[in-house]
Image (cartoon, rainbow, N blue to C red; front, top):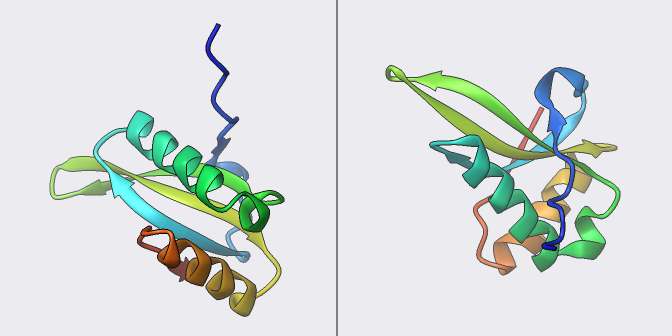
Length: 96
């Protein structure tokens, strides 16, 4: 059997005050989850202790799914993770 994809948290379980990184916004939840999995494979050490999650957001009559990791202690930690992911050809934005 194929390996099960990593568990992805629900956005409502993420603290709104914590720092996060966003690595993409996709047209469906499956592609956002796949993006999170690719990022974890590309930068396993940096992302190991973080919580991957998707967040649905309405945009121009459609729904996009943000692919994000939560659990950073501060802005500099989020930006450091982004620096690693950018070197691995991911888009990355630190957000609060």
